[in-house]
Structures are given as structure tokens and as C-alpha cells.
Image: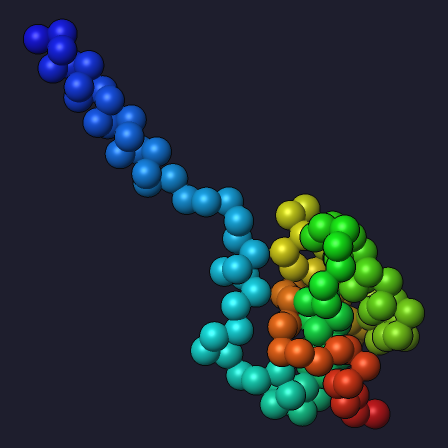
Length: 125
């Protein structure tokens, strides 16, 4: 009876450990599969184009980790689009930026890995 209880406890703990998700959500958050291409979305308006430019800069590879990557993207956004942005911040895990435009539109920006930089995005006037 004791061996059977120990076996059941072992099987249960192995099953529960197998059911735990991994905590690397970067690949799920940054996946562009099934979304409108960035260049097409950028043509919807000025704020959408700014969003794509920031997302492209957010995806550029830096060797300092996700926190530094978010800081670089925030600095880029403030320096390049400061007159359009009311507030910008990174989430604690560094997987997305939250931008509030002066028009009141608030959006989350994830890294956009399409091989382009933010400066290559056409920003309408």
C-alpha cells in the first residue's frame, strides 16, 4: 500500500511538472504570424507608422538583454517622435512597450522582426 501511494505521488508530480508552461513568452509575444505586414499597417496613419518604427527598433539585436533593448527603443521613440508621444514605458518583463500618443490613443508595441530599422519606416506628415 505504501509503495502504491509513493508511485501515485511520483506520477502526479511528474505530470504536474510536465504541465507547467515555460516562462519565455518572447517568442509568443513577438510572433508576426497571421498579422498585417508592418509596411501595410504603417500606411494606416501617422501614429500607426510611428508604432511600426518603434517596434522595428525594439526588435534590433542588442547584446545587453531585453531590459536594455527596451531602454534603447524608448530612447529612440522619445528622441525621434517626442512631439507625438505623451508617455512611453516598458512592461516589467521587457516584452512590450506601452505608448500613449498625444491624441489619447494608447497601444502596446512588440518587437517587429522584419529586417528593417525604424528609420526605414515611412512616416506620413
